[in-house]
Amino acid sequence: MQRITVTLDPGLVAEVDRIATLRGYAGRSEAMRDLLRRGLAEARRQLDPDLSCVATFGFVAEAGVRDLGQRLAEIQQRRHDLVIAQVQTPLDHDASLHTLMLRGRARDILAFADEVATQRGIRHDSLSLIPARIELDDHGHGPEPHPHEHIRT
Picture 1 (tube, rainbow, N blue to C red):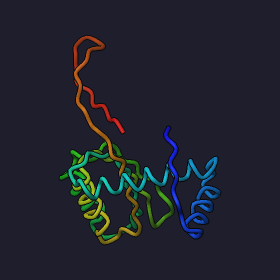
Picture 2 (spheres, helix red, strand yellow):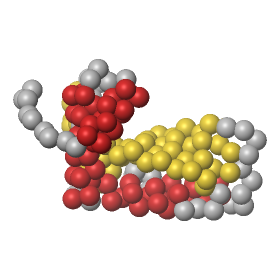
Picture 3 (cartoon, rainbow, N blue to C red):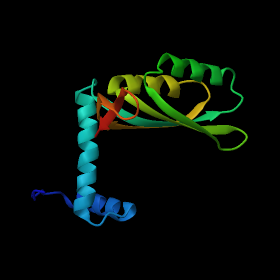
Picture 4 (cartoon, rainbow, N blue to C red):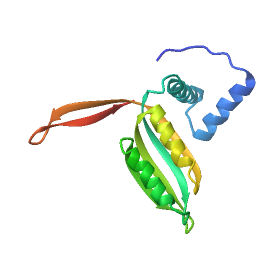
């Protein structure tokens, strides 16, 4: 690692210290590295909408909203190339939490999340994108060589 010197105003130092304490970082350096990683990932995503990413997308869906399940299924089917996996967890009699793992270009993932989040009956949503290089690689184990995706962050 390389040491650098940064000058921050007192209010910003207090915020970093508060975050370090709340999140349980060992110290300011760990907190600063994490904040920089997050900020750089966001900047890369904004500068390069074709950036390859993996993501988690969570949303709360109301039960009993007319055709919501059908609309969500249609959206996911149209973008089956993005959805790796999904889990649906009942929260109560009125709502369920949906968690999707996604893989693709940042612009496609953002458009998908926006389309889902704007459906009538979706209460809350949260998207977390992680820049990743996605590679296909043929290799052999078992009877025949076959392709595997490798995700590198």
